[in-house]
Image 1 (cartoon, rainbow, N blue to C red):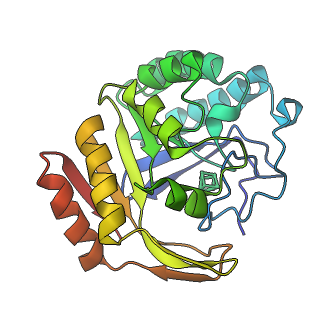
Image 2 (tube, rainbow, N blue to C red):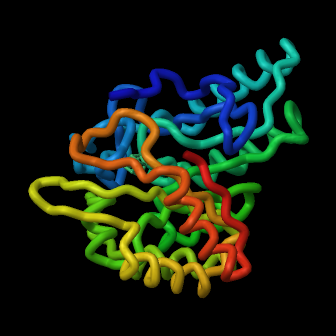
Length: 257
Ligand code: SF4
C-alpha cells in the first residue's frame, strides 16, 4: 500500500483536476483517517485513535507548501489545482482552518489562476470551523458512497462514532456548494457481501442527491490496489448508467473509470 512521504508533492496529472499539486497534511509515516474504507489505496487504517500530536504544525506545513509553490512557479510548471489528499483525512488536522487561510494567500501569490481542492470524507462537517474553511476553497469534494446507513458502515467503516445521517446533515449545511464524490463497487469483507449498485441503494442515494443538489457528482470505480481483496470493479457502462440517473435529476455527473 502507498503512503506519501512529503507534505507537498507533484504536480501529477489527474483526469479530474488537470495538473494537480498534492498537499498531504496527514502524517507522512502513517495513515490517519476517521474512515477505514475497504478500497483505500493507503491500506487499512491500522491506528484507530486520532492523535493530534502526530500532525505536522501549520508552520511546518506552510513552509513545505510555499517552498514547493515557489519552485514550481520559478520553473514555470503549470498547476491547475492545489489538492488536499494524501495519507488520510485532511480535515482531521487540528489547524486545518488556519492552513486553508494561509494557503489562500499563497495561492493568490504564486498561482492565482489555480483552484484549491479538498478531497474529504465529510466526517468532520459538524465542526463549524471545518465547514467554513471548506466553503472558502473552490472545490470541496465530499464523499458519499452509500445511500443506506448499513452500507455506509460496511464500505467506509468509520473509526469514530458517526452515522450516514450525520454526514448528510453536515453536507446539507453547504446548500449545494460542494462536489459529491462517490465510488461504486461490490464485494465481500469479513464474510459480509455488499454492493452499492443495487436498486435499493441507488434509490436511497439518488434521493439524498436530489435533496442536497451538489454542483456536480463525480462517480468513479476501483483504480489501484485495495486492502480488501474480494472487491469487484464496476465498469464504465455501469457507472454511466448511474450517471444518467443523476443527470435525470438535473445534476451534472462525471464518470471516471
Ligand atoms: S476516506 Fe479516503 S483516506 Fe480515509 S480510508 Fe477512505 S479512502 Fe482512505
